[in-house]
Image 1 (cartoon, rainbow over the protein chains, first blue to last red):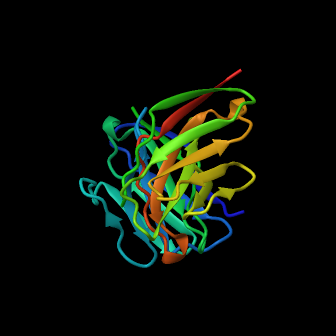
Image 2: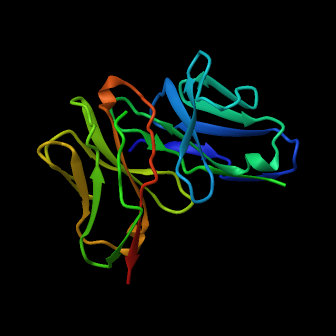
Length: 114
Length: 113
């Protein structure tokens, strides 16, 4: 079946560091991918919609200069958390839709900023 | 998007059927009911979706009321591995293009031995 892969699964880094998270569609092409963030004991919150070959669409309240999204190919979207701070620590999850099937999600990236 | 309402938590004994309700009274005619679940520290997993007819797959059954204002996800023989947060989401069909999913708080289902 369709698989969405995220890398890394976990990252721990110092405050001020920029962190890149990759989301890949392994056996299908995705012109659109979605990035979510989930804080402990809370639900998933959509951050942005990643569009292949064009600018991402950000949800209200999400800083586009803080969370850089690049969707340069039909199988890869990246989320870069720039100058990360402890409050950016969270579980980041991407999703993509293979054709006319329901969306599939990656296994998430747990980001911890010290 | 139509809003959904689910109980915050439920418990079920292992081996029994788990019935998870969802209210979606403002669902539109072209919106489907989707169910996902999230096991701790993993991404959400698709379970099933339907428009108006009952649906069944290898994971679960979905019963949608005739007026489509509510639905029930049924896990016929719950196991400990079914412990997760279950999300009911209403959205247009996948063939209408990739569209964002709006997650509510879901139901935390605990399967007890």
